[in-house]
Amino acid sequence: MDALRDFFAQPGVSRAAVGLGYVVAVLIVRSLLTRMIIRTHLSNESKLRWRAQVRNATVIAVLLGLTLIWAEQLRTFAISIVAIAAAIAIATKEISACLLGSLLRTSGRGFEIGDRVQIGSVCGDVIDVGPMTTSLLEVGVPASIHARTGRVVTLPNSVFLTTSVFNETMAHNYALHVVRVPLRADADWRSASARLERLGRDACSAYFEDGSESMIRLARDRGVSPPKVEPSVYVELPEPGRIDLLLRVLAPARDRDAVGQSIIQRFLSGEDALSPQDPGADTE
Image (tube, rainbow, N blue to C red; front, side, top):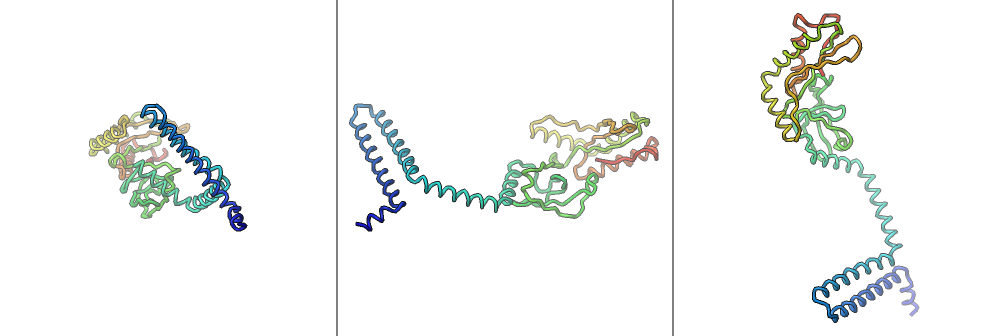
């Protein structure tokens, strides 16, 4: 008897016994209530409804009672689970971030292999996309030239969680490029602007129709208004004594530097080109 009493005196055994007794008591009450419902003169539908409510109440009572009986053990178990989960989260933080970044890239459909993208300060052609990393064939140095450097840049996919991605080839390999030409404030900027616009029209005439259709299709797919693709010249006053002409022209995304350089060289070779003491020209 002493051994049996010592056995039931153990905390775990005593709680198990109490829990078992509680469950049996609840089941007995449920059985009694069910019999009372069956013996009533209610309709069959009402009886079914009351029996379902008694069953649901029984489940809730059992779960609530067992939770109260084992509250201390459940609290200890929950603390252990939280500690283990926190340790796992800390150990796999970078891996989880990369996987989430990959999921974000896939769901957003921001780019695919072959596209030219800019991620932060890195610009290049996408050559590989994996669940953990994305590889780019770098272009730049300087960024305005868009020339390949021959280097491969591998980025963790976690960068997509915090960094914007610019896809320069989304519109079927065409992009709107800006050519900047600075002038002195006393220069004939009106005639220079007209000539620069004519040079832009000549430069993009060979592919203008195809590029325009690509931009229109992209705008329709995205549900936005199509951009203006005709060559246009805008005037800026960046500082006193200087006027900047900005030619916005449609160009192949991977040949923007060639198009920009061609326009600048033709502009400088004319009789109305910038004088030697004027600022030079560059592209953006």
